[in-house]
Image (cartoon, rainbow, N blue to C red):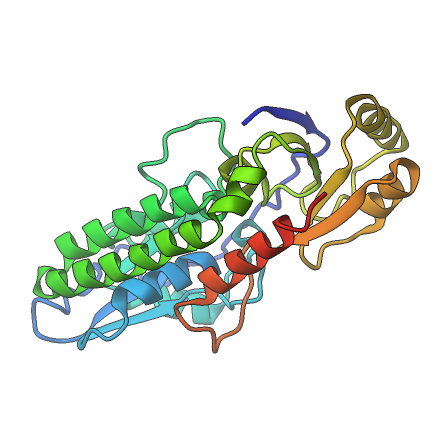
Length: 295
C-alpha cells in the first residue's frame, strides 16, 4: 500500500496514577490449584479477542479492565475498579505497540503478573498501533494470545487451541466472503482523517493520504485545510474516510470544496457490555459493505 502521512498533531494525554494497591504482589496461580484462571484484557478489541479464546471453558473467566465505550485506551484514566480487576488477574492481555502507554506502571506494580502482548509478532515499526483493523494482523494477534494462554494455563491448552481454530476459521471466511470487495479496493486513492483506520486501508491495499488528527481533528489549521484541498484536487482523491461517530467538521469542509464523498468506518474500538464474540466480525462486515459502495 502506498501511504503519504501528514502529521498534524501527535499530542497524547499523559496518564498518571497516584497510587497502586498491592505493589509487587504476585498474580495468583489459580489454574494450577484447580481454581479459576482469570483473564483480564485492556480494552474492547482485546476483550472481544480474549472472549473468543476463553468462551465455553470451565474454570476460565475473562473480563475487560475498562468499559467497552471508552474509545482508544491511550485516553483512559484508571479507576479503583480497574485496579481491583488487575490485582486479581492470572494474566493481563494488552494490544501493545505502545498503545497502552500506562502499562509500564502496571508492570512495575505487579512485576510477577504475566502480560501477553497481542501484537508482539507484528514487527513493522512504521505501523500505528491500531493493528486489529487489519484482519491479517488481527489473526496474528489471535494466534499470539492463544499460544501464550496455552503456555500459561496448560490445563486448558486444548480448549484454547480449539477456540483459536474456530475463531480464525470465521475470520478467514470473512475475508473470503468479501474477497471481491477487498480486491477492488486495491490502489483506490483515499484521504484518511483518523489515526485508527490506516491499518484497515493497508489491509485493503488502498493508496492512502493520512492526516493524523488525534481522533478529534482539533489541531487542523486553515493552512492544513488549504494544502489538503490542493492535494486532493491535484491527485484526484475523491474519497474521505473518517471513524464512525467522529467529528465531521473538517471532513465536511474538505468535501464541500472538493466534491469528495465521506464514508464512516468502524475501528472496532467501542461496543456494549452485552456484545458477544462475533462483535468484531459484525463490525468488519459492516465496514466492507460500506467499502463496496465506494466510487
